Amino acid sequence: MESQPDVAVIVVAAGSGTRLGAGMPKAFVHLAGWPMLAHTLTRVFGIGEPVQVVVVAPPEYDESARELLELAAGRSEALVAVVAGGDTRQQSVQNGLAALSPSVGTVLVHDAARALTPSSQFDRVIAEVRASGDGVIPGLPVADTVKRVVVDVVQETVDRSHLTAVQTPQGFPRAILERAYAEAGHEATDDAGLVSAIGHPVRVIAGNELAFKITTAWDLNRAELILGPDWDVLDTRVGIGLDVHAFSDDPADPLWLAGLLWPGERGLAGHSDGDAVSHAICDAILSAAGMGDIGSVFGTDDPQFAGAHGDVFLRATADHIGQNDPDGAGWRVKHVSVQVIGNRPRLSARRHEAFATLTRALGAPVTVSATTTDGLGFTGRGEGVMAIATAVLVPVAGGRPRLPAAG
Image (cartoon, rainbow, N blue to C red; front, side):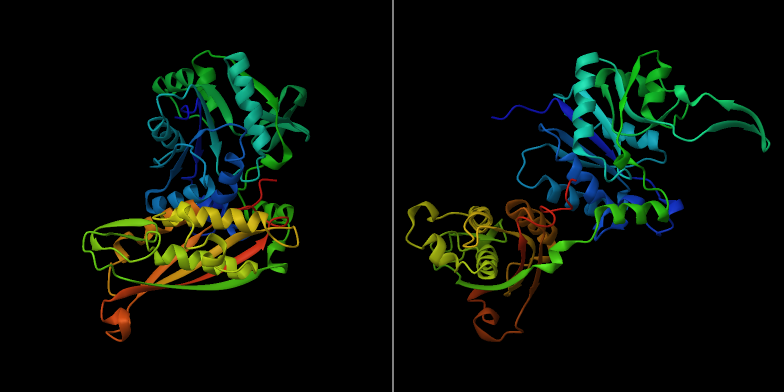
């Protein structure tokens, strides 16, 4: 069994974003086609070791945060959680601390609004906390001349050689940060302020220009210009897949559909588990890549796939298109949409669970919808299930891996 992570990153995404003027929490405002939080999480999951990731989000955005977190985590075994934010940033971080795994000894706190912070900055903070046992914050020298002003009148020029513009992530030994929050007698603007208040040292390491905080519309535009255009749109492929399975004659056969087990429902007949949704997705992906279909690639007589669940085929298909392109470039899945046609099971109650399961298996977003045929045909008579999937692929060599590129 893989060891539990020693490091956790608390991503604070509960801010209102009033100054951005987008009418929604800042972390969920779109940046180059993705919510800002998606860009942030991509960088977090670029850390050079497994970490626990806790996202602190507004309660009404819990589901959106969870979907983005699961998508960014992909196939990793990292511990992930979403917790509700508080009325202040300080309360939000406290909520995040309460969700940490017992194995965690080092905690990083990061603002979701610093969406372009390189993964290397997280790695350097972690390394310095471990080496020193102190709090560690990244910072940049103050370039502008700084004046101390009272009622619009300059009093003096401040020596900027002793000033640092502070960024995140800020890292600390867990016990020190928890003590600082437990003893906090005031609202601090950052976590380092609380740690310093209890007399524990805080060190500064070199920050990065890309770790700027997106606060205003100008900042958002700057970030989009840095990211550049999404070149994926210049070279895409689209494929369609369809799969049909009849219900099994054996009422004891379990039903697997959309990667989920459906207790109490009769299963579908098939060589594997009969998951029409997963099979349709695989056919759509292989069609778009020009690599045949699920039967020709994996074979119905291959014993390793006998009884295999849909997630096995999805992972195998994603790996196949990335490594077996005749032109050598390889493809990856950008998005899949699948519609289920049948009277049962009722997908509506588990649609988000299906989204998360299929997305995690494929490493790309999968949306699921369902409909009936109003009593017409074999699906209308309740004899089976049909699924139709559409997949969009982009080259491995260009654009973003699953989520926006980590830079």
